[in-house]
Image 1 (spheres, rainbow, N blue to C red):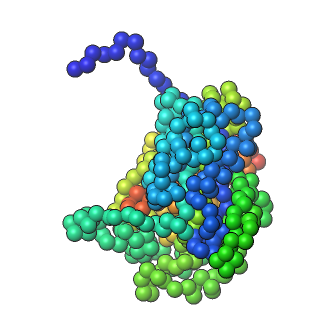
Image 2 (cartoon, one colour; image 1 turned 60 degrees about the horizontal axis):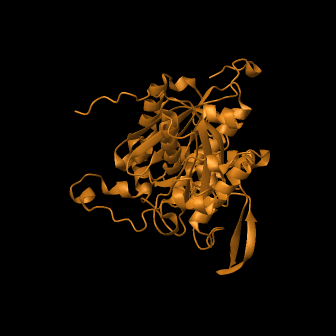
Length: 418
């Protein structure tokens, strides 16, 4: 056995804070999408540059690490994204970086991985984010799933198609009907439209100039300031008439699920000490985080055990949570989560600005979008002490991060504080 080191220092876990987060507008994947002619890494660079421009007094040389996620780590989403984006964004050569893949929870894992480094004292300030160009790299592109998954019955074949897993979730939770899913989707669209009207989404949106296409030919640039997939004109009748592509007479449609999208997010996180020393704002404090595995064929239920783990780590219960940002990969997945915890479909604490059904879901980027929205909501709700961001993850996982509101005031507005 190796002798005990004689001069080591015992490290204490440090508080980690969310300083700021931004994102690009999310585009529709495909030849007609707003980012059809853009590179994925360039979208990420624009997010990082936009993030740093919001803090002109901060020296980028103080960034200790950069973690960037993509689900399809190939082409312009490959080449050790964190490092390549740091270089392309103009950060000093001294700033290292790395890539992450946890499918839809990529950006969330970028944040939690770097948070661990900050808490341990290996970093003071870091940039975390995610990018996905699903127009160029559809989910699973260039992947070669091992045939043992199916031949040895390690997973149900449905686990390799996210739409099928959502139909399976409907089977398992028959109380989550198609009508409920459609009504939830309609509410998401309406809340997103209202959030745009009030300016709450634009607060963390970085306008992106992208090469525009007309009839397949590039025609100069256009400035994109809104998510392309928004459908404020959505009606319940229209949703009910949509086809169910994953199963005949099924319940999952293009209207009650997130779309195929392109986009990028970036966040600045730090130790509380570093934020104070550098004069950086604190928009949220990290309380706990957890990831959990579930049966891959019902991957949408993953947020339930992940949330239970994160709550247990924090010594909290679901009743302590005053705001929820739940990624809307599919309406059924959100509704199953709400049913498990006894939360109403229309509870105002859940996705107050709408969710991925309206904004879009560029896979690995979405985790920071959830954090951006929660941070904004914290500013508007000082009576809320704790909130969480949670999402389901392909191949049967879930991830949850619990945050504390630095603006918390138990006496705010005379409301019942959570």
